[in-house]
Image (cartoon, rainbow, N blue to C red; front, side):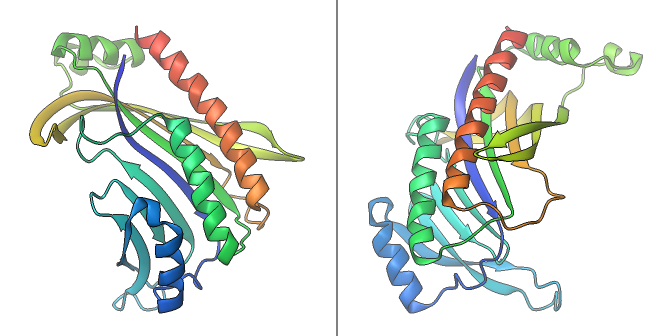
Amino acid sequence: MIDINLRFQLAMFGSYEDIAPKPDILKYLIDAFADKELIPTTVQELDLVNPLSPINRLSLKSADEVWSIDFGANRIDIQKNNKDVGVVNMGEFKQFLDEAKQIVKIIDKRFPKKHHRLAIVSRYLLKQMSKKVISEIFYKNVNTIDLFKQNEPIEWNNRVVTRVQQKILESEEIINIISELNRIKGNLKINSKNEVIDRVELRFDINTYQGITDYRFELKDLAAFIDEANKIETKLKKDYIKLLS
């Protein structure tokens, strides 16, 4: 049912202003991530105090733009993107999470931090389907009005959010679980050629509750969150595949 692993992401929220594009920091990170051949660059971040003067923040990207680590003032994003389907070796989500743990460990060695919020995100494309089958998926998951029953929707989004209590080591955390089932149209690079796609996307976002802002997640807590969130994501994926089959 799932055909393409499209994007994997780990996000951490906290205070990271000291991880800046300075020579000693660049040298440490470039050497530490030599296996991924990450190239330092900058991304502009909006300054809420002075919106007309954005701040340059550090970013590391692989030459093929598959891997990226963005160091914002208040969040760090680690991503793996399928920039060329059939060429890029995305691997499975758990493989990415294991690598992301090691990346955070390297960052933490130089910049030991506590985080106040954590998130993992995964995006998949389902196998190529006829327009009829795509419509059947929509009507199976959405009880809609007559207009859309009589006129097939050409794009749609079905987003569901819930919250659960989850134990992370010794702490009880509130976890947001977000799933999206979308019909998307656009262009995708497949085997180094741009192709027009009309597909169903499956997206999961599992994150700690934004209303709790205590800096409580150390490295061991982050690893435990990743393991628990991965179990949730795995079950979601299995249940959706069963639902859509």
